[in-house]
Length: 175
Ligand code: NI
Image 1 (cartoon, rainbow, N blue to C red):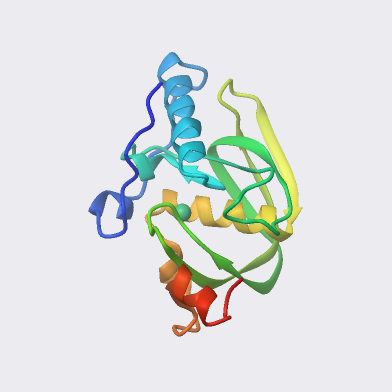
Image 2: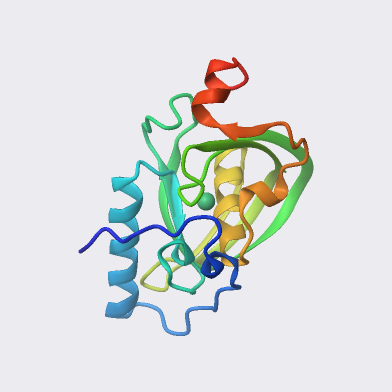
């Protein structure tokens, strides 16, 4: 299945609120998820949400094994979540440098809730429910935001902690 073009910040389709998937375990849903994995892996991403390839449905994928874009990151299991929801378990805000395939070449420091419980369905309709913290919680919150038309630059509090990755590395701000 094809690698799809990834929409970039400025495209109004990234700002839509996506719709729930009505029927699970359909050929269309499986094909979408295959395309999403192919697209994410081709771009060395940690996660991808369906609206990033122009599909306004509440579907997200993520997973971090060894990723050259996040060399020091904790691993996160490869996961598909359809129609996700979450609750905050610990609203302590932890800040980390995030990137996004829709904001290529840039990084920003974003505060997120430290621990959450999320639930949703895999592509076959099996319930997934997990309590997570750390990088796993951050990746989930980042991808979930895409389903509501929110991108990480919207959440940057310290506006100076945002820039091009190579400049931030050169400045020693981000490594
Ligand atoms: Ni993103």
